[in-house]
Length: 284
Image 1 (tube, rainbow, N blue to C red):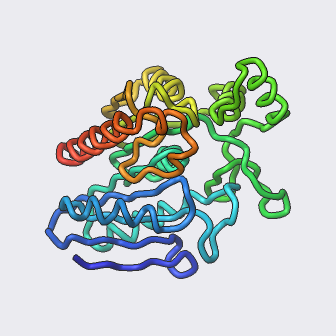
Image 2 (cartoon, helix red, strand yellow):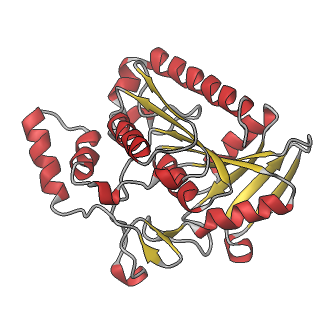
């Protein structure tokens, strides 16, 4: 196993390559919802241990990178793919969980070298970014070549959230993102039809953080409308939570995880097997 570190200021992206040196031309990029490389590297260790060279990558929060989810330059994935091709990797896939899943779909929509996307518990629309306007003229959460993506404005999001909590007689994180997501239109959906490869959507009926199942169905409708020429699947778990990734985060904040811990863990194990099977069958 050989590890190679990349720095944003030098290489245009932040990451650590876990190279299995087994002459396999497949390379999996792993990104997550949290900043930093700690969690992506856990996945890199997992997948490289199964024989897949993996690039653990962070898209914000590092030295030289954006500090907030505002105008995240998708060129980072482009630079990463170019660096991996120089090393001899020909088939490049990308896998993300939660916010990282949406970022994976967005990256693949502008980088034609990515021929496989695995998106677990993803959002479906490009949202307005966080941070101050002085930090970047682009307002969306992502940008490409200095240009904004069409995005869903926040509007009176907090008051909408409070109204929903009062209506449902409980407080749930899902309501915040659900109310925001409902403002989305076809214009600011993730342009998944531009992806140059297969897509696997992984969701849960009991996602208590984002309306990932609804958004996956929405994006599949978009693929069908645009006569998408590559393969795509949507596999939904009836037992898991928002945390379908093998290394869950913030489980204590999810009621389903506290109520059904064994079922949620089994869903993670099943999801990992789905991902490994997808990687085994992956072809350009």
